[in-house]
Image 1 (tube, rainbow, N blue to C red):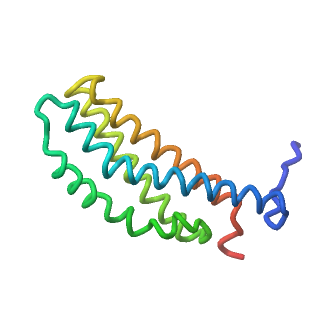
Image 2 (cartoon, rainbow, N blue to C red):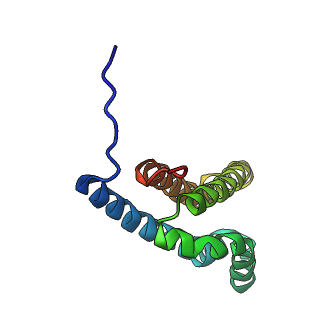
Length: 143
């Protein structure tokens, strides 16, 4: 049988890894919020031939991000496994919605606009990967 290496959650090595993951997650989360609320509407306003209203797009994105803004304090602290698990479920919903939008925009507008949504999907994937890694290292929820 293969010898499975267990993670010592109390080790100093794990504490440093947790701090690094929390810092990366904080940065990626804030970049995604900024990109989703400001960058995406501005880019779509500039790239789409219909030139949609940028201010209206920003208002729509901020409204769409209300659940994400509610969990932002949990994501910035990055300490509560329960809160991060709920945040992970929420970001998976955002990831699904962004993926569907990516494919529909690719079908509708082609590659000229699809990369804008592709970047959104990549940022959400990075957030979810960071959350999964952090949840693995944090102290057990039932301990």
